[in-house]
Length: 314
Image: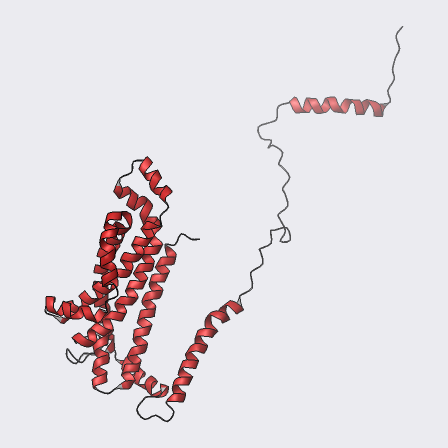
């Protein structure tokens, strides 16, 4: 027995739609017909973009603490100086010293003979002597510090000599230099050398002695040569100590050159101070004191920047 199923026209059309869609999908497209394009995504509005992190406010308190105390200290110095010289006729006041400094630095590089040159030339000649003496001290003192710190035999050998010669006054070495070199300039360089070598030797040796023994045990296990131990293990560990010794040495060298030039004469900031004293020009002596202090401060700050650059504490 066969049963017949009747559909309305709407039901027949709904049943035919899936078959028509499948046939259309399998039918090849003409070459000229382009594939359907994907719907374009809308551009991100400004509100949807990631917001920038808020800028940190400027630390005015930190700036104030850096600038205000030094300014107040200098103001206190000038104020006390002005108060003490208010009625003085022999000691110049800050205003008179400032006027003399303006005239002095208006032409700092004049030259009117070997014994009459501007303060700029005197500073440069002193810095040249310091550079030579300090450089020679570094070439000798730093390797000697490595040797003393690395080998116990040399440490026992040189420690008594360093303890004996280190406290000697710089001016005591100057006659020895004059006797040996028979000239003022090399005698001053010799004095700088012998006085600035000790901080580098001592600090470098202490740095080598404080290297952990485990590092040296590993080097011994790896059978590293002595040169590789110095360059790969000791030098990076000792560098902060070495730079501290260099900073102390350059301060000592700048301190010594002034005293040495006062006695040897010639051109230099120390001789210039002594010459101005012979001329009873106290204003120029005070200016020279500030110049010596500023140059020494700049040298120390420069070496402190180098020390922070090579510091491994951070």
